[in-house]
Length: 291
Length: 86
Image (tube, rainbow over all chains, first blue to last red):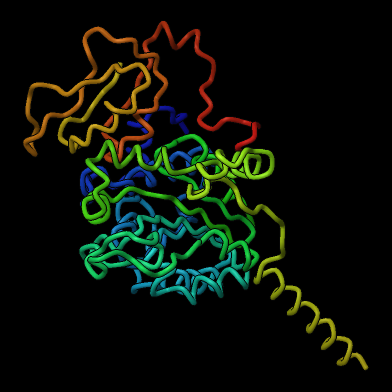
């Protein structure tokens, strides 16, 4: 197989070019996430015949349609539930889920927390743009306090979801959060998440200039992308400043969004435990038959 | 050399904004969609860092390092190994 080192070869290998260009708005981060996923898959040399891409409903859930591999476009919020079914039917498959914040934590919140609790071996790539972009900018559960949406014209008064903290508390094996504006760390992170056994989740902060940026007066595309640089901080740096920094520095970074790998552990997954259970019961049954 | 597929470009200008050596600009011609796609400046200091290729939301950019540069360049690793950003 020829080595893929340019984007042109990468596109020919993985992209359904007849579907291109995308439906995404100008300045959207979803295409970037797709690009990062392609590079990670290429570096891992994943067999595309044994990889399934699952998605729900929303802008981000259009992504499997552009990948030249098996995909499943499911009902709203149920992508993780369908993926659990696929994994149960054929444990050899690699499953990558593309989902949005409204899809995964809004309507599909219960599927998400129970899949994380059971530690099912799937990779969730969650694209968080703080709003329901496809339907016109309604208030999402991840929208920051005070942000404006079509269903919250005077500002949001609900406290937002911290998806990474939630997944961490539920004991997911790999939890990370990155912004789409930096390319190198996310590619490495997606690579690690795919290799990881058990539930792995990566949250991408993605700009949505049309539905979120416009209403919240974040400026044009360039300013909106810069907003993500100015309002994020690496978790190591955050912890260091919180421990040793001055009050002034602490005040400065207090409201910034933390980026980085939040959890990286090894815990047996649901299907490993299930195999052990079947084995234990079968040996018990065999012993009973001998008697 | 940088190849840009003009008809895939939506003209968001992220590559122009993010280029560390300021080597890209808007071109004069219009594409199918009626926008001015990005192009490489005539006088540029492009060092083939491939940031624009990775960050383009429409996958329209391909960076092909020149032959001379290719000989000297070591194998480009996309992800840094080690470091604090694990």
